[in-house]
Length: 236
Image (cartoon, rainbow, N blue to C red; front, side, top):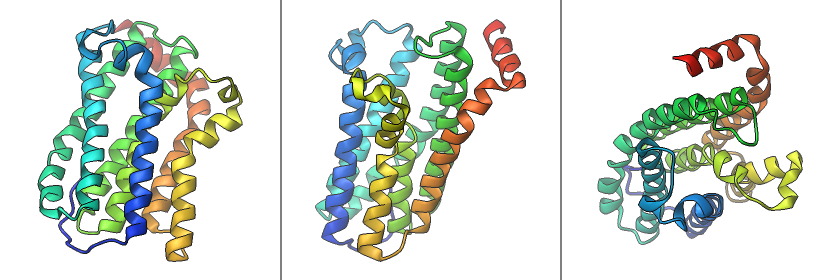
């Protein structure tokens, strides 16, 4: 989450990305409050120390995102760039620990609302999308407009597990669920059209990657080879 450019974005950018960060925070907190945040954080009864590390890393990413938005909005760009360097190892650890935690969950058959194959497919695709998008974001950190859009979309790619834990009945509809999940992409496209009169290429890349994971998710979970691979992971 760092840029090397000192160009000052418009006030509309500050308000929009602050609002999107707030949306991500609310989505994560509502989803994980019962089992993690209100359960005592480190004292929460999670399945293993690995899950605690996973939770700390992903929560740390949200706090890093908040800090970066605040620093950008207050024009503290030198601090923004310094703090942003911490995002590189955090993002790498999130992917590595995320996959390790996922494999552990598959072995525990920890998929109360879906099949083990579906959980494995969904989380594999989401972590992969995050890894790809955040890699592009760090490579394009000299381009603030592209960088912050890709960081936002990388974060949005991880929102599925949080939203799936919401207990509101209106989310029983798949259409509503995916509209809420894709709200980051929808809002970003509208914002681009309103402020730039065109959709930024980074918005297209990020939104396209997220939509692709959602389109592939179900066919992958039902593929014979994926079921065999999941069974092998469970036995290893």
